[in-house]
Amino acid sequence: MPHVKTKPISSHELETRASKYPDIIEFVAHSINYNELLISVNYENEKFLLIYKYDDSEGLLKFEKITRPLKLATLKEAIGRVSKLLELEIVSSNIENLNKKPPLFASKYYKKIEDFKEVHFDFDKVAIEVGFGSGRHILYQAAQNPDILYIGIEIHTPSAQQLLKQIEIQNLNNIWAVNYDARLFLEMLPSNIAKQIFVHFPVPWDKKPNRRVISVDFVSEAMRVLDMGGTLELRTDSDLYYRYSLEVFSSFEKIKMQIQKNFALPIISKYEARWNKQEKDIYDITMVCNEKSQKFDNNFLFSFDKMSYNISMAENLPRESNIYKSFFVHFERFYMIGKESMMIRCAFGDFARPEHKYIILNKEGCYYYHSEPIGSRANFDAHNTIKELLNA
Image (cartoon, rainbow, N blue to C red; front, side, top):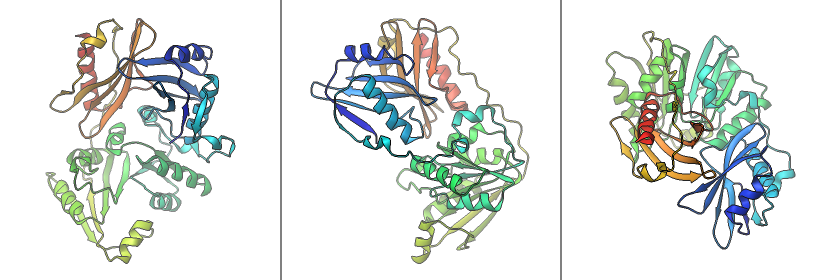
């Protein structure tokens, strides 16, 4: 991933140089326990963090993964620009291709998870594909059904980038790409909005079943998001995943389900083509939504009221995870911004799909950087616990 290695520079000198460019570098945060700095960057209408690690022999400037933007070109350019502004003496770098034409992005079809807090769908019908991979299926469906909006959810960033390129190449206007965890994404959608949810060839996670997409919670959310008569369609080559999913679907009190084996689709991925040559069995389970769901209110307020920084916070906050019945809170790292402001890296929320955020506290107040958590019940419960711990 993009980075530059430099000759070492003191944290004080780096901050002094950064202060000359407030339009690009918002602040520098110093780690309390580690030789690293967080640099808040405003670049190309994106706000994110770079991290600078250093010791007596060298420094390393790279992106910070929690806040990173989707566009790799933006990261490369930002690292290169900040390196020049800070006058870092570069020893080695993997961002030399800055002058080449950046990858093509159909950016208006890329949706951030925050966009779905107040989203307007311009289509009467919506379909969702979870884990679109190469994008063959969602691209085919969108081309065949121009009156349906297809929302593709993919946690693998290069796959999301590739889909955006293909949307532009194929001149499609009815696909949105979301680079996020699908298990959290569904909680952002209104009830009864979708006609189809596709889950094709999810990772089986045989050794870590808690990471599987299909679960009782996921299926419950899918049934809420689906309109009456809508379908959740699972397709898998894993016999274990098929049997596991069948058990999950069957655990619901009232269900309508269809099962198929070795039925071909009009379009298949390169992996499915390989499995067909190997004569592997392909299983389909389709679950039908048979009732309307109540309107879902996920308008949680993630405010910290009148909370502000005090000097004893870093010492008093727990370093170990705080485990509760349906969520957890873990303060991972602590940083100082000047002498009267603190930044905390925090993990919290659902055990299977945790949220990672930075919290900034200063004399004026307390807020999340650079965006609020996703509006899920687990995140909201964790947020209230965070407030209690900060006030302790």
